[in-house]
Length: 552
Image (cartoon, rainbow, N blue to C red):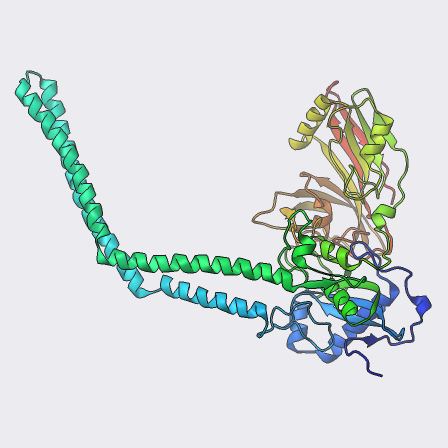
């Protein structure tokens, strides 16, 4: 019986009753035990077969790997393995499934197209760096400078004559004949200046060096236009070369899949991640997907937070449209965020005719989002149907619990938001971090911006990021190796406290339960709570401080 070389057996006998009833929802999941076993076997294979070689060296610099638990046509249970992108300048390695389309194949359509564009680039570069072109440009500029200097001398002489005429007129007693002569001389000088400028331009245009230079520049412009056209055609063709399959046996290329998204076209790297490669190989070779997981190998990227060996959800910007199509025909786990149960009412910490302060539970959206889930705003509107205008003054992440301030009319909302914008409020968060923070207190200043390829994740960017400043104070260090900490954010960036906690340039200790920037939590909630808020009441002018007990 022939066994597919990409199909790998487990180290023990796995029976059908150990398989999950539904396929993994790849954008928010707890790794199935079989995926954890498969990942361990993949790590063992890499360490035993590539110790000391280029594969290990490149993986150690950081790479996303994936495993897919499958059943074959004979109901044997095993797994497939994949990496994202390329590895050691190749998409084909013995243990891993191949790319959906091999961009590096020297005989492939894409590489041939790239080579053709590369030849144009070389011709453009040769023209730009051609010594003959530089010499021509120098000669043209020299002649321009000479003619310009002559015109400038004539212009200065005109100005001197004009000055002398003004002086004569100031003295008075000019005869009509002298005045007429002065006017005629002035008119002649202006006409002569215009003629000399025209003649200079004609002389420049007639330079043989300029004609040759323009010919070279025209060739460069044509080559640049040709390169742009070829690049666009090649990119569009690439979208068509990535033909994805789904569990129903249907196919669609990337251009079709992304045509209904907000961006309309696939982002760079779409289709090259581990997850779509795994499903593509399974559907192409008759395997039934049962569970999937992706994990990080090696160093964390400088801007992001990744931990070696930790499992991560599939990226949304590149993989959400693709995997949504590919999973059609599979019975898939529900989105855990949509399945989470939240209270049907809100706990009010403060309420008057102008505003309310509520205690948001973890797992509840602050405002309605893309998922069909109860939000704090919708519950509040049910409680206070008479409230009008913008109401939510500030937001908390879905996974974060604690204090949220709500205005009951537009004017109050505007006043409260200005307090947040001007940093005239005081917010205190409490968190439990994985690891021991050495310093008792300090300040973290790391600019943040969204990661366009993996929303809603944020990344540190010292050039394009927005200022993000957090004061912290350690409350306690536990015997289990955790740190209970108090955060005073001076700015309110998305995921600021989560990223400042986890990033190696911050505290280097992720918040417990943070599956985006930390480690797999086994169902543990994000241990981040908005504990206290101080602000000025917009009507009474009194300072108000509200606290909410930390629930973890």
